[in-house]
Amino acid sequence: MYEHELKNGVPILLAISTCPRCSRMKKFLESHHIKAKVIDIDLLSREEKKQHLKFLQPSNPSLSFPTLIVGDVAVIGEDYDGVKEVLEL
Image (tube, helix red, strand yellow):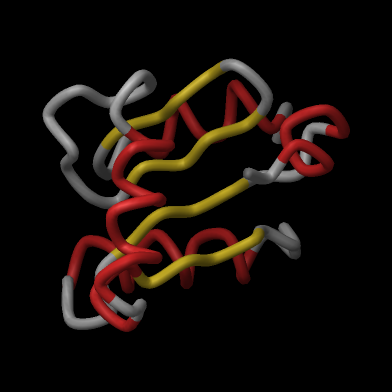
């Protein structure tokens, strides 16, 4: 799952559509012109949700949102300094 994005450093944002913190992270990425693969977990089917949570768990065992994954690095929550660092902004 997401091998292309992981291999090529494309940011993957796992979020929840109704989460205020997730919305702020989406806006932050947009304001910095970052083209991220955004997945709103709550809008997926039950099977897709299971697959995505299984994908997320090694990077973020607490399964909290938002989580931004870039390569093998995960930035959890509203850690904008961490996002700037991993994306070299």
